[in-house]
Amino acid sequence: MGLFSFFSKEKKESLDKGLEKTKTSLFSRIAKAVVGKSTVDAEVLDNLEEILVSSDVGVNTTLRIIKRLEERVARDKYVGTEELNRLLKEEITGLMAENNTADATEFLLPDTGGQPYVIMVVGVNGVGKTTTIGKLAYHFKKAGKKVLLGAADTFRAAAVDQLDIWSKRVDVPIVKQGMGSDPASVAYDSVQSGVAQKADVVIVDTAGRLHNKINLMNELSKISRVMQKVIPAAPHEVLLVLDASTGQNAIEQARQFTKATQVTGLALTKLDGTAKGGVVIGISDEFKIPVRYIGIGEKMEDLQVFNKAEFVDSLFGQD
Image (cartoon, rainbow, N blue to C red; front, side, top):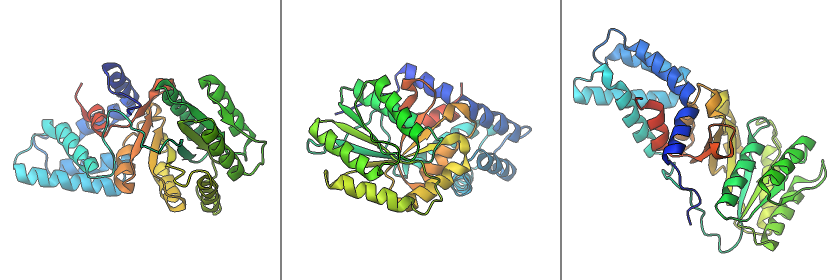
């Protein structure tokens, strides 16, 4: 059953607005790179490489994009600079199509045999993790799903309080314990309560430890194991939340978390406040993990299911 139907005219406009800073930065710099040039030559491509790297697309991904453009220029013999944005759209879309990023206008919940779909949310403090959980709960509930939240970030009193505020705001139940409680115990109770209450979705928050802490792997593994005592396939999704405005640091966090646990999906937040939206392309390409959601504003509706075709079109499409 489809949960979200996206990319109505209103949502497309929201996406365009959310990516405006990144798009403006890219367009102005690309325009300068082709001043006085009628064709895409080696100098233009060198300048473009520098622009993409400094826009947090990432070195490896940038080199792949430039290689594709070089092959395109060699094949087509003559490529005018006025075609550069169109070429970038086509080649980046093609690159992302090779990765494990499902392109959809709606997000489908897999069949879990009548059991709750369990999402374990991970990420460092300050990336918008709690807000993302709250917005996810809102969208699931809006789609007619019964949602339950689990406050397993028990190391910060504020984390439990913040999630509690979201549960009241969205009007969904929450399972919580006192500060300092065993996170795995909260996760176990959350999944067990989800089963008892016949919830469709259980979203479990986890501690926002720094990504270089050595005990992160042990903690996340323990939480997963106790969930599996209730639902053997849980968690069905391990969602890593990253702050797009941190650019290359977001890529480093992704690198560390994918070493610590089997991340199955990504959520990129705060795209509306940064010119570093190119990091979405780099993360998608480097990790081959589906980008599930992007945050493009503060409103509930500003958490959107990621659609690579719409994303690249908004980023490189001519106004």
